[in-house]
Image (cartoon, rainbow, N blue to C red; front, side):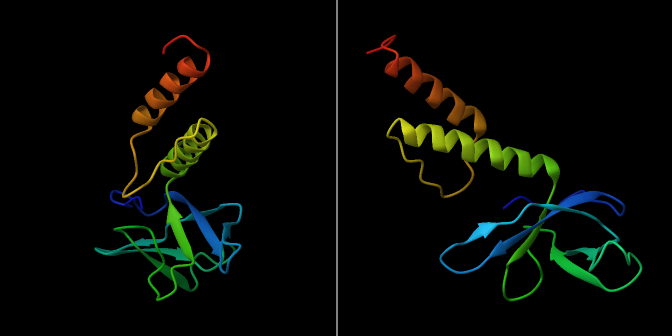
Amino acid sequence: MPSLEGVKVGDTLLLLTKMGGRREREQTPEEVTVVKVGTKLVHIPVSERSPEGKTLAYRIENGVRNDDYGHTQVITREAYEAEQTRESLEESLRQHGIEVWRKGPKPIAVLEALLEIMEKYAAGEIK
Protein backbone atom coordinates (compact mmCIF):
# COMPACT_ATOMS: atom_id res chain seq x y z
CA MET A 1 0.00 0.00 0.00
CA PRO A 2 1.39 3.37 -0.95
CA SER A 3 2.53 5.80 1.69
CA LEU A 4 1.18 9.32 2.06
CA GLU A 5 4.57 10.81 2.99
CA GLY A 6 4.83 14.41 1.86
CA VAL A 7 1.08 15.06 1.73
CA LYS A 8 0.20 18.60 2.79
CA VAL A 9 -2.96 20.41 3.88
CA GLY A 10 -4.96 21.30 0.79
CA ASP A 11 -3.69 18.36 -1.30
CA THR A 12 -6.29 16.32 -3.16
CA LEU A 13 -6.40 12.56 -2.58
CA LEU A 14 -8.66 9.80 -3.85
CA LEU A 15 -10.89 8.00 -1.35
CA LEU A 16 -11.36 4.31 -2.13
CA THR A 17 -14.17 2.40 -0.44
CA LYS A 18 -14.14 -1.39 -0.61
CA MET A 19 -17.38 -3.30 -0.39
CA GLY A 20 -17.03 -6.32 1.87
CA GLY A 21 -18.01 -9.92 1.40
CA ARG A 22 -17.23 -12.32 -1.40
CA ARG A 23 -17.95 -9.66 -3.99
CA GLU A 24 -15.23 -7.36 -2.70
CA ARG A 25 -14.86 -4.55 -5.18
CA GLU A 26 -13.93 -0.93 -5.12
CA GLN A 27 -16.36 1.85 -5.83
CA THR A 28 -15.44 4.78 -8.05
CA PRO A 29 -12.79 6.86 -6.24
CA GLU A 30 -13.98 10.11 -4.70
CA GLU A 31 -11.78 13.21 -4.55
CA VAL A 32 -11.14 14.52 -1.03
CA THR A 33 -9.05 17.37 0.32
CA VAL A 34 -6.61 17.02 3.21
CA VAL A 35 -7.54 19.37 6.09
CA LYS A 36 -4.96 18.31 8.69
CA VAL A 37 -1.65 16.43 8.70
CA GLY A 38 -0.08 15.04 11.85
CA THR A 39 2.97 12.89 12.44
CA LYS A 40 1.13 9.61 11.86
CA LEU A 41 -2.32 10.58 10.55
CA VAL A 42 -3.86 12.55 7.69
CA HIS A 43 -7.34 13.97 8.23
CA ILE A 44 -10.04 14.49 5.61
CA PRO A 45 -13.51 15.91 6.19
CA VAL A 46 -16.38 13.49 6.67
CA SER A 47 -18.12 15.41 3.90
CA GLU A 48 -16.67 17.87 1.38
CA ARG A 49 -19.62 20.12 2.17
CA SER A 50 -18.36 20.63 5.72
CA PRO A 51 -14.55 21.00 5.51
CA GLU A 52 -14.34 22.59 8.97
CA GLY A 53 -16.53 19.94 10.59
CA LYS A 54 -15.78 16.42 11.69
CA THR A 55 -12.83 14.65 10.10
CA LEU A 56 -11.76 11.06 9.49
CA ALA A 57 -8.19 9.98 10.16
CA TYR A 58 -6.06 7.88 7.79
CA ARG A 59 -2.61 6.44 8.50
CA ILE A 60 0.26 8.11 6.66
CA GLU A 61 2.19 4.82 6.42
CA ASN A 62 -0.40 3.12 4.17
CA GLY A 63 -3.41 5.42 3.65
CA VAL A 64 -5.84 3.07 5.43
CA ARG A 65 -8.47 4.55 7.74
CA ASN A 66 -7.41 4.58 11.37
CA ASP A 67 -10.02 2.06 12.56
CA ASP A 68 -10.23 -1.70 12.93
CA TYR A 69 -12.01 -2.32 9.63
CA GLY A 70 -9.78 -1.04 6.83
CA HIS A 71 -12.66 -0.65 4.37
CA THR A 72 -11.55 2.78 3.21
CA GLN A 73 -8.23 4.11 2.04
CA VAL A 74 -6.92 7.40 0.68
CA ILE A 75 -4.31 7.36 -2.06
CA THR A 76 -2.61 9.89 -4.30
CA ARG A 77 -3.80 10.12 -7.90
CA GLU A 78 -0.34 9.05 -9.14
CA ALA A 79 -0.33 5.93 -6.95
CA TYR A 80 -3.88 5.08 -8.05
CA GLU A 81 -2.99 5.38 -11.73
CA ALA A 82 0.14 3.25 -11.20
CA GLU A 83 -1.98 0.58 -9.49
CA GLN A 84 -4.48 0.62 -12.37
CA THR A 85 -1.60 0.24 -14.88
CA ARG A 86 -0.11 -2.61 -12.83
CA GLU A 87 -3.46 -4.44 -12.70
CA SER A 88 -3.91 -4.03 -16.46
CA LEU A 89 -0.44 -5.43 -17.15
CA GLU A 90 -1.06 -8.37 -14.81
CA GLU A 91 -4.33 -9.13 -16.62
CA SER A 92 -2.55 -9.08 -19.98
CA LEU A 93 0.09 -11.46 -18.61
CA ARG A 94 -2.69 -13.77 -17.34
CA GLN A 95 -3.98 -13.99 -20.90
CA HIS A 96 -0.53 -15.32 -21.86
CA GLY A 97 -0.70 -17.91 -19.08
CA ILE A 98 1.47 -16.10 -16.53
CA GLU A 99 0.11 -15.48 -13.05
CA VAL A 100 1.96 -12.75 -11.16
CA TRP A 101 2.11 -13.50 -7.44
CA ARG A 102 2.63 -10.51 -5.24
CA LYS A 103 4.49 -10.14 -2.04
CA GLY A 104 4.71 -6.47 -2.75
CA PRO A 105 4.17 -4.22 -5.73
CA LYS A 106 6.10 -5.30 -8.78
CA PRO A 107 7.80 -2.52 -10.76
CA ILE A 108 5.74 -1.53 -13.78
CA ALA A 109 8.84 -1.59 -15.99
CA VAL A 110 9.41 -5.28 -15.14
CA LEU A 111 5.80 -6.18 -15.96
CA GLU A 112 5.97 -4.23 -19.24
CA ALA A 113 9.21 -5.99 -20.25
CA LEU A 114 7.76 -9.41 -19.43
CA LEU A 115 4.59 -8.63 -21.42
CA GLU A 116 6.69 -7.46 -24.39
CA ILE A 117 8.60 -10.76 -24.38
CA MET A 118 5.39 -12.78 -24.16
CA GLU A 119 3.80 -10.84 -27.03
CA LYS A 120 6.89 -11.41 -29.20
CA TYR A 121 6.82 -15.09 -28.31
CA ALA A 122 3.10 -15.33 -29.16
CA ALA A 123 3.76 -13.61 -32.52
CA GLY A 124 6.53 -16.11 -33.29
CA GLU A 125 9.29 -13.51 -33.28
CA ILE A 126 11.22 -15.43 -30.61
CA LYS A 127 11.32 -19.11 -29.73
